[in-house]
Amino acid sequence: MPPPGKNEVVEITVTDFTRIDSFKAKNAMVFGMSLGMTEAQAEKIASYDPRISVEQDKLNGQRRYIYDSCVADNDTAEITLGYLKWNEDDPALAEIVLYESFWQFTTWPEKCCDLFSGETQDPDSELYKSFFGKPTKRKVMLDIPSINLKLVQFFYPEHNMVITQNTDGEIVTYTISFVRKME
Image (cartoon, rainbow, N blue to C red; front, side, top):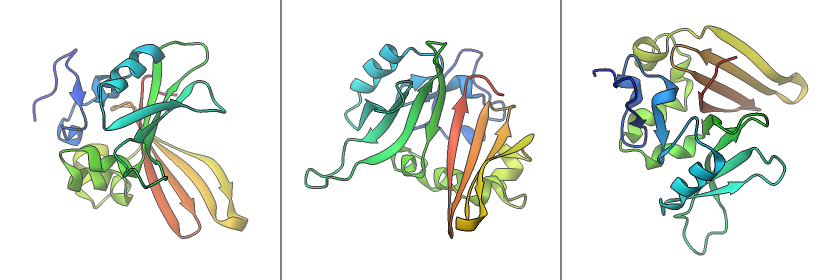
């Protein structure tokens, strides 16, 4: 797939960005929201999409959670799709983090599901070979062996992305982060 133009955005709910070799997170939009937006801009754009709701984290004022607002009326459980994160000293959206539940909002669900699996870290997988490759850095964020709890981040600066692997007992989950500035 040809690369997007210099300022062309890629709405990842409708475009499989892993097919764009030169993809950078700065070109990503999620439900119309993109890196660099102010909190007010992101909240206004989110208000136009009836499928989602965006709510401020009660403990962290720089974070807004993205929820599935299409949950059945009789279902009190909220489905968290991810979150938006701003840094305290910068009004521009710094990071968009997506959870596995996000895949249901894409037009490419089968391939999107692979993003939230070990496929991103498996050198034999097509996703690893064709898009991610070997991470440039691996960082253990949390490791508590006594309860088998571990959080590991894998960095992909060529795409401005971070994959986080969360191991909790026998359960392994992944999140995808689009970041404005890499560490």
